[in-house]
Length: 321
Image (tube, rainbow, N blue to C red; front, side, top):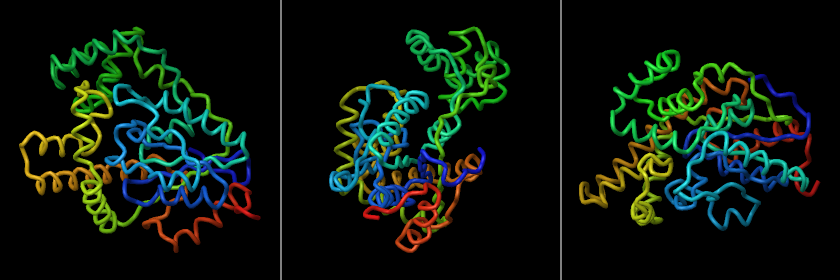
């Protein structure tokens, strides 16, 4: 990704970082200061049934500035980078149309990169092929399914770990539906959106982030995460759906099933949250090289550094002048 060209409107601020880093608070403060609209860039926060477990903005926060793409899909549905990008581009256009600054924030790096760099034009896969792929994966297991992919598409099989079920299934779907390797589509240069992106990444120190992740897990239980997971599981959804793979569903589901005590479930949730944050840090460190990175938790002191940068980058005054 190329470095941004400052002061080239129309601008879109993109904020990435691990869970519990303070990026949502930063997005809200920017929206209040620069007449912005906050647009969700998190793959799981799009599902309406997962408010507490994903630390979705509260009603009080959404009253302070417009928020878009939060809780817009049912857990029955599947969101993809392509589907989210289409929704995000529409939300960005709507914000620009109202003279507002779009501020995309989230921890799903793939979504943020898809927005800024575009996606390869892979033909749509018929629903029946998708269903067959998931049924076949469930029938064979990860190793055997990966071996089957290797016989169909050796190029993609060499690139993918058998345990990366989502991408292995996707490669199987594409070769089955189109007769062509996903690798061939990925070589096609995608069309990029005509915006001046201003990418920021918040990467707090390890010790700070661990403490924030643990505290967030405690708050989630206090605010009703167990009840939220119980309601989600009562929907009897396909386990392969994205909402069912949200951090905390398996961990708290074990307690609800009588397999773990509440303290054990909390400890498992904390560990899963920390592990997720670690994966996010690794991704953002290596996959957004053009972003302006701040190696600390968002705070008022960091705000005093970031806001002048944003003001210059988007060539936009603060609210009220």
